[in-house]
Length: 262
Image (cartoon, rainbow, N blue to C red; front, side):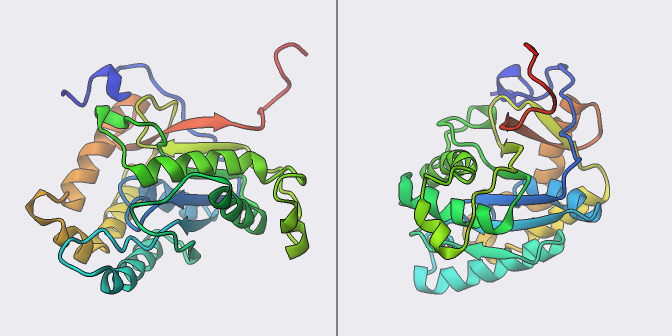
């Protein structure tokens, strides 16, 4: 498949709009260590350089991700690599929910845990990975990615409803209605882009390079950080009209202005 075809959502000359950046707090929700680093971390680098606060929430520690390494040894290794990669893009807060890697299940339990984090961090935007069966370029999505992405989207609304998971109020976590957008990386048909030309791309590459043991464990078929991120951000840049960009499918939960019928 030609990755520049319209189905991939990039390179089609549509001129996607830039993601609004008039916000201060972001929560990135992912299934595994390294998920954020395959592109989204470049955007995170741009945002933290602007003084925005970004936190990471991961459903698993990625313990099933290295075939030649037992999960008990892989989990702390991958956690350490995730924290190191986060620091490369200005993120200090990295939290793990400790679901079992590879068998994360969508459901109220997962939604509750994400809502708990949303009410604590009070983000204005949430970034996650595509929850559809197919991703950018028609690639088949992984099961944990689908479960976590959809749970993040639903939790963004749950976070503001005091009658969903009312037990969280007993923990002192009041409803949070401030999530304006939920943005998904790797989507087949993105709607917005983030310019990551220059330093943000470089810091994003360094963030993925922090996962050295993981990528080494993938063998010869592994992505090399620099050529991969340069290539994929270049395709995104073509859709945004810049040199390098991260593309996102944005679900807007709070309108920017009055509804059209007013």
